[in-house]
Length: 178
Image (cartoon, rainbow, N blue to C red; front, side, top):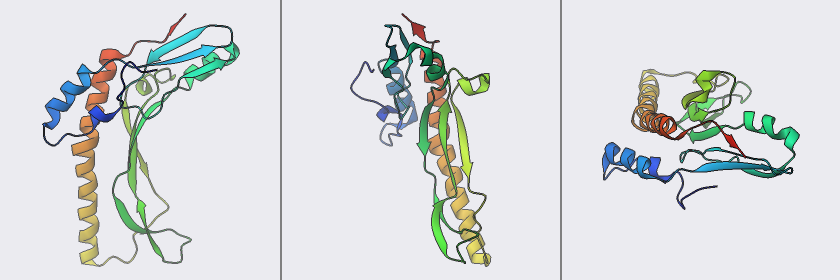
């Protein structure tokens, strides 16, 4: 359930106004919440970050499933990363464009591990793909692609993670039941 009609757009970089304006926009937004109601009439609510891609809200959940459902709440925003030509071990040397590095900002507010309860960035690697037979020019191209990936992490992901953590610290409280 949201208190405003917009969701997630404020966290995207705004090249015309810069990072400081974007952070101001995020802080000025209304607070969003998720709501899970049970068949017995019990309702649990919690903070839903504007950057989260999914709303865990649910209705008519059997009461016996509520604690499991709350424990499984995960807020996530994906970042696709840059594509590179790679060869899978079983591809007989045929190169395909794949996202070699990509990731997501994740927050699991009710996780057992306290480090997972605040927004963090997780990077997915593709260890089963190879860059084969590179000549010096191609090594330079790979280096340029990895620098572009690093720039994406530095220029887009890092500011989004900082915004997500600031927003989380300001707005998150433990779920409230009634």
